[in-house]
Image (cartoon, rainbow, N blue to C red; front, side, top):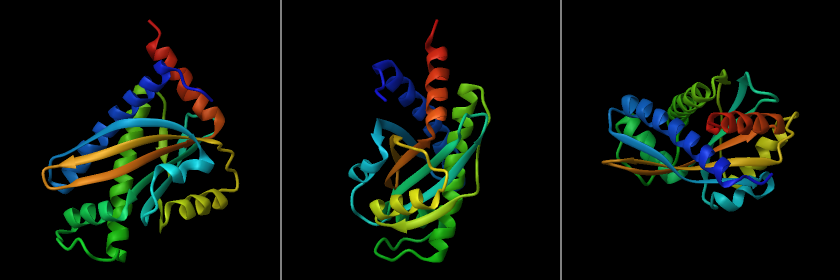
Length: 203
């Protein structure tokens, strides 16, 4: 599917609204001023996702989307390991950046992911005037290409060919944290979202 400039701009604005809500919620949780924006948006073939996320070990937090969206889909939060450590250090009151991920990090990351994605979907659903609910999260820590293959293999009903990538950046006074938010919509869901955005943009 080819996006028009208008659709791309609308999706980016959708991403920025969701990102702003996620950042506000995360700021409250970490008691630190955090800003989050979406400088880039891409519609990419799911088989080429790994080309956009680098080769380093990363954490991927997956949520299934249910609610008033045709076909449903998934949201995937991708955070490279060095950014994971910065995030969980802020949450857990730690300072060591040169360390392996622990079970405590994974538990904190699931909580952070749940808060960020829930806030993102709440804002998105509010703008589109629909209900979008995330499932409990699941976590994979691996090379991004291997992790995506595991996710796709694990979802029996996966009928997803294209992925919307919101390249997000979290900024705070203390940290610079890179993350990516992937919307993995089944084809009817992507069509629905684009149609809703077109209606919002139509005078």
